[in-house]
Image (cartoon, rainbow, N blue to C red):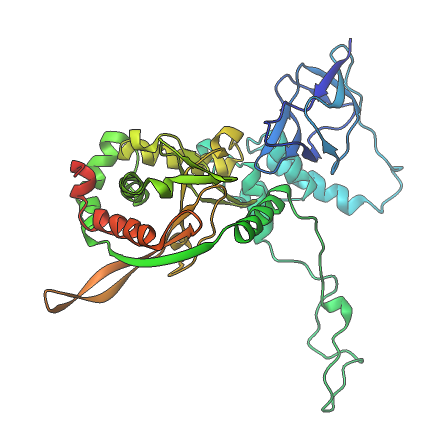
Amino acid sequence: MSIEVLVPNLPESVSDATLINWQKKPGDRVTKNENLVDLETDKVVLEVPAPESGVLTKILKNDGDIVVGSEVLAIIDPQAAATEESAATPASDTDNEPQQTAEKEPETASANIPLSPAVRRLVVEKNLDPSAISGSGKHGRITKNDILEYLQDEPVLETSPRTKTPPESVQTDSKPATIPASLRPEQRVPMTRLRAKIAERLLQAQQNAAMLTTFNEVDMHHVMDLRNQYKNRFEQTHNIKLGFMSFFVKASIEALKKFPTINASIDGNDIIYHGYYDIGIAVSTPRGLIVPVLRDADQLDFAGIEKNIANFGKKAKEGNISFEDLTGGTFTITNGGIFGSMLSTPILNPPQCAILGMHAIKERPVVENGQIVVRPIMYLALSYDHRLVDGREAVQFLVTIKECLESPAHLLLNI
């Protein structure tokens, strides 16, 4: 009796998915729950596991096809035996020997390193040496994202080698040199579903909102002193490092409580005031920017916030972020400072009406009590929808965050 491999049910907000690549081919034996194919949606990449063990007898959808929920992708025969692979060319044909040798070398190298089937297939297809790739998974295992990052970091091979002597077509007089087209390589690739969705939402935010940004600066030395004083005990007690993001989440929640309009959103001609605080934390991944959400962040302590953020980062790196992790959110925080950004104007994450931008901490001279002192300063940016949020509220909201961070007792004592 044949078994159908179906597209999993997609959330209401996702209408379809794009088939990225098959991990198996017809005739291959598959094991129950083994990943067969990757599907890309607007938000995440889904792995479709084998519903039963058997032989993959037929593939009905190809790479690049658009599929919808419950559509049949392939057929598995649990009773059939796996077909023996045979060479595609006669033994005397030596044209493919270099390619076959290159494929055997990754297979031999990867045999000594524990790899998932999806990762092993990429290693063989791309002729990679797994020992040269740093693994970010559990016990140092190599994940699919590790492979993709490694491929992105590799230099682009030119279609023909450059030569130190100018080609005959290059003029030696005062006329501009003509560079052969073969030395100016280009590559056209389709935009990923996630990148297309990001582009759509950013354009939507700029076209449908009266977006404005206000700035302020915060002296981080009190937070840094507090963190340095207790970070070792914190990590020993909670088994998680104490970062800066938990301070900013706590400060944002205090400010949102004082200015509930900034925690609201617009729906047509209505304003929706949210009586909860679901804070989106922007996370950069090899596929693009995603924003997992801290649910009921006001109910979490510092350790809870740090653990959730660390879990999001791990899941994003391994490609295991779920739809539930990315849905909702009433306010977003993005930290361009980890990439060295000194100042920026973050774009709204619709339908939210505000987003806080963190930046790099730099030592700067400031005046305190008539004296010039050096302090670690961070510039803050709050972008907001002026249709809903007045400038006075936006400025006072950012001032509240500044006060909470410059006097962390506000956060610890809830005053």
